[in-house]
Image 1 (cartoon, rainbow, N blue to C red):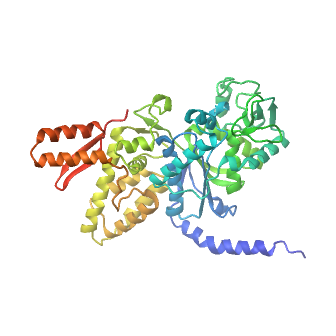
Image 2 (image 1 turned 90 degrees about the vertical axis):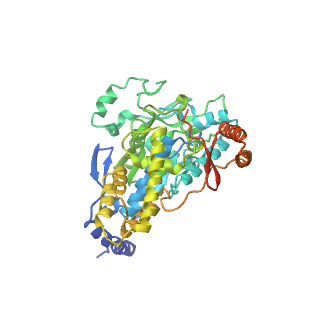
Image 3 (image 1 turned 90 degrees about the horizontal axis):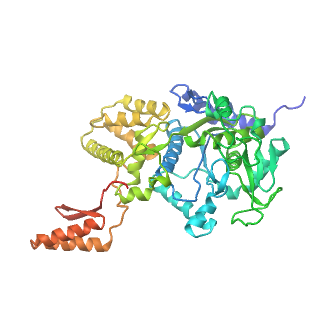
Length: 502
């Protein structure tokens, strides 16, 4: 009689049993994470693929930046959400986790529906540098911003330009299955009419929404067969050489934006994984396209849970570069706020709800963070060893309720003083999830120019000599330069002006 299982397979089962069965048993004894699944438009209990013996980790893919310009604070809300999901699953739920966030350094056109020019090419013209220099410049800025926001690097952060072959292979498979067509001198397109449930991510009435989608509403139709068809690969113009272009089985060109994510997520997380996260702006175009091409290639449901963070508004309206309110971390720091004030601000609202950014709201977040730090310092001096198990349980329950960060802050804020056990748990929470520097002093991230310090020293001398007219004049010079001077017993303190955002 033939052996039905190889020795390697049996050994794998034994190892998985030793590692995971005790863990799964403990999971049945505590609350499970519930998260809002955009695919079903309801909050669901999170059951990872490792409990179905289909994976060895919880796989999370997050749509990362297109590195053609400085990331906005709206972009950082998405990066923060990816960090929050990862940290809760890893440190609160204690799952083995593998996270992937891509870097789009080619192929993302200025219109998400495949129109106009590549954003990297546009950035090259704007900055008067090559597209490769553009990508390097803003990728470096992105990584620096993650560090300032206390967002740990993700396990894999692949670039689109390093995965051209994987993208071509996916297009070939779609072509072999009969889901593509070619438009001469334009590109290879996905025929969405052959995907029965195309657009299902848009909600229960998605078919009606697609029926009402007028031709050209997403993009100039050109020779496309259907309004929702999208480019898998674009061809370079015959009379123009792009800076980023490569040969292919079809023609010299560059990838469509949507194919990049499918190729990279499947390479690093497999044909099926647990969570795909992105901004709410991806629900109508990018993610439906990604779902269509991936499910055709892999012939099964690839992602169990689709999670989207909602838009960040500014002063109650839309954020946009054309509106002059697409603020960056540098804009935040220039007003003498820490990136961690912004991180705390993001905790104030649940990821799936709109959040309104104003200068007053950021100021309140800054004050709340400072008050919490003072409360913790006071608690270290006055805390007792009295145990309160409810504190930790309540915080865990809030995190497991669809990452309810406002509830977490409310539970923490209700305490007048923290006990020793609560301080211990807050220390853990701060290091693994909150990461807003509650237990140590922050470094001054903005350097004070030497000439401003010299003016402040001259003013101090003038005050000592009771030359108050000169002291006032020097104060005005300091203020006109964008700084404020505060008198303190030790002498003076210089800070940036806290003027309103323009």
